[in-house]
Image 1 (cartoon, rainbow, N blue to C red):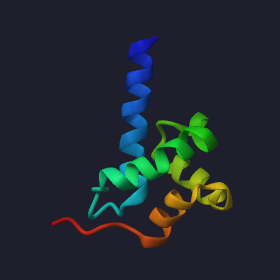
Image 2: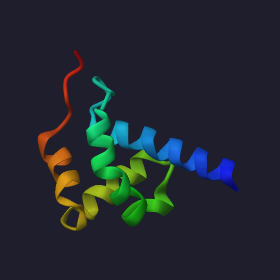
Image 3: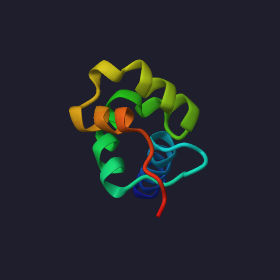
Image 4: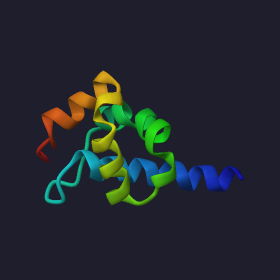
Length: 81
């Protein structure tokens, strides 16, 4: 069970990285991932690990996202340095 939880958490983190960034930049900051992780589990847990379904779910539930996660969606991806 613990291994399943680790895999699920790892997939959620990867999904959030992709969710918060365009395919071209494909890197979110740890702060961006942290801002949305709780919302992803709370609102879109059944969609994990499907990135496209998580993205659609988060967008559909934008009004229910925490303020820090909303800011991630509004600011868009951060350019790689």
